[in-house]
Image 1 (cartoon, rainbow, N blue to C red):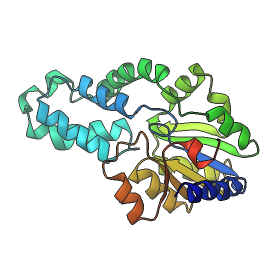
Image 2: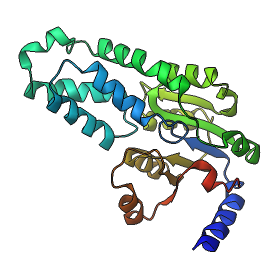
Image 3: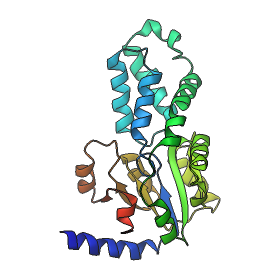
Length: 238
C-alpha cells in the first residue's frame, strides 16, 4: 500500500507543474480554522437556546465554504422563527451586519494565532512558476489582514479573495478579467468546493485533516475524488 501511495505522489508532483493556477480554500485547507468559526457562531448566538444554536452549527458544517452572511441569514429566516420568537429584536436578529461584525471580532484574533498547514513555504518553492489564489467563503478583508499578519500573503501572487462574493462569483470575475486561467486545480475541504471546481472544470483534491464534513471519506469515494490529509501530502514534499 505504502509503495503505491509513494509512486502515486510522484505522478502527482510531476502533474502539478502542468497547472498554471493553484486555487486554495482557506478554512480547513490552509488554516486549521474550521473549529474557530464553529466556536464563534456559538458565541455570537449564545443568547438563544441550545437547539437553535445546534441547528445552525449543523447547517454551518454541512455548508462549508458558504459565507457567514448566508449562514446568519439562514438562521434569521429559517431557524430563529422556530425558537424564542419574542426575543428576536433583543438579540439583534433584525441586524445582519451586527451579527457579522460580532462574528468577525470573535474570529479575527484566533485566526491570527491559528495553525498553518505544514510545509507551505516548501510547497510555494516547488510551484514557483504557478500562480497561487485563495478563493474562500471567509470575509475578504479579514482574510487579507490575517495572511498579512502571518507573513504569508506574498505566497498568493494571484490574489486573496473572499465574501461577500461567493466562490462562484469570484472565479467568474477572475476569469473575465483574465487574472486566472482555465488550467487550474482547486484544493478544498467541502462539498461546495468540489461543486465549484466541477462548474469551472478545474481538477479537484480534497484536503481531509481539518475538514468539517462528517462523512467525507464516503463522499470522496462515491465521487471518485482524490483526497489527502494535508497539502504537503499531495505535493510530495517529503
